[in-house]
Image 1 (cartoon, rainbow, N blue to C red):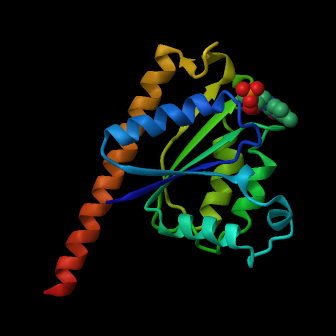
Image 2 (cartoon, rainbow, N blue to C red):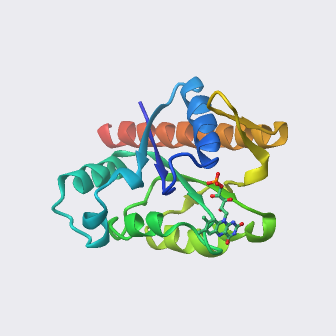
Image 3 (cartoon, helix red, strand yellow):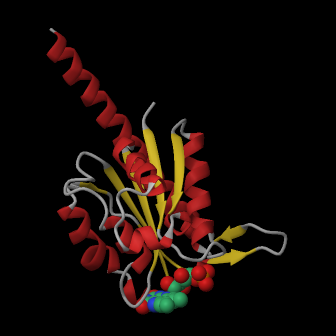
Length: 190
Ligand SMILES: Cc1cc2nc3c(=O)[nH]c(=O)nc-3n(C[C@H](O)[C@H](O)[C@H](O)COP(=O)(O)O)c2cc1C
């Protein structure tokens, strides 16, 4: 079964960004995909900052990325870019660490002013890491996500529709890639 890895570069565990990631996670499970979540904030900070490749937790996280067929890269907008936490993790990936992976960028910001952050800040880095199959992604404004009193989040109907659409495209791309990989295998075996 294709593996999806959701990489969260949010230092805040209570961020409204989790409303987005939870929604996408559930939608992908409904599509029959297997999804794991990697919260970069849970990795040992000193090892991340000193790029300690010998740290077992870092090694396990890098293996998760290597084994994923598709990744969701989720980040808040901080200072007109993605979070520094996400960057220290991306810096540890191998040179072509995102090659052949389908990538779904998922961002939340305080305003629409930085709507293009995925284009000008994230995509060049993804590209250096070998990522070519990058979906347009979703940028949400934090006011479109409401924290509920009993826990959980409510998303505006429009945001839900955009996430549904992107998740659907993501799942479709994953299916296409699996199909083309299996037909390549068949040709190679003949
Ligand atoms: C240090 C910091 C810098 C931020 N910089 C920006 C920014 O440049 N542009 C923007 O639209 N939002 C910015 N924000 C807002 C967050 O992206 C966004 O609203 C937040 O992550 C989601 O809110 P929550 O985590 O409080 O739920 C910033 C927030 C923080 C804490």
